[in-house]
Length: 352
Image (cartoon, rainbow, N blue to C red; front, side, top):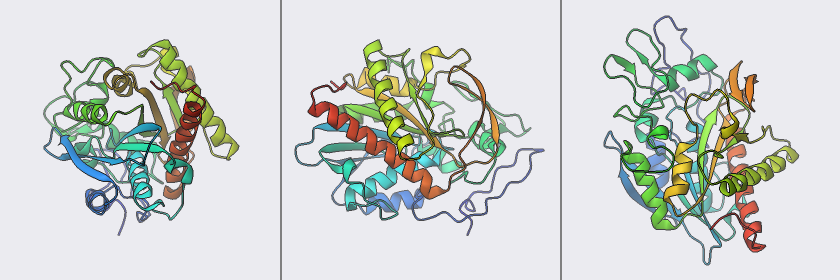
């Protein structure tokens, strides 16, 4: 059975039909039934509902706390329904915390030592329920259709604070069922007046668990990279996040993994919407937690124009298979944990 067969591959009027040629591997648990099965199997990890989405679906949180942790890392994934890689990575991390191995049977001992993890594996459960389960082997055009959503007439909804009401053939991956883009449901500082129950649920969960570092997992059609929220947090926090991201990038390049330099959002000239207001809001509302936003690869084919590194570029997704995409996400989490644990041991940590 095709990995995307439970929902037909998107086709806006005039768009070509694109069909994936793969079966979802066991390391890619992104369908609602697989997610539910993984969470229901947990015994060592604490699992609880942290709220309900705009569409009434449960948002689940998972906590794994070793004896005497030196650091608490919060992980959010699935803010956008068309970015299943982060969800798959979060579920692999949870499996690792529960059983000592990820879903491919790989051990990541450096992740486990003296770190408490607080994980929201699917934040925007509404969008995850409506979007494709993988984009590996598909094109950027198919990704854009599922991400943006489109009207019955074939017009893309695009990115905005709230999707236009009425005549939506597909609401896309950006929005919850109320039509709000939860990434931009705050100004990056205050939760006052936020339109996102999902954002509020994650913040309250992280507050209750004392998160020191908030890592938001995303995916895009370019090489893996971090976004540094220099314009939305104090300068010292922005520099600290940038330095951690750069250490992770160097470790990844040394390991032979594709990786781009951290993007400093404040330096961008063509940014219609900030890409990291949610992670910045976590800093301002979770007692000064260090915010990090990571974009993993989607596995799409082809190249397209994107604006990063201070200018517009022609970029190409590395085109990686599912297992290698998961490896990159877990490698990044491992290096974040290693870097911050080492800094804390030296009393040089950027965390509070």
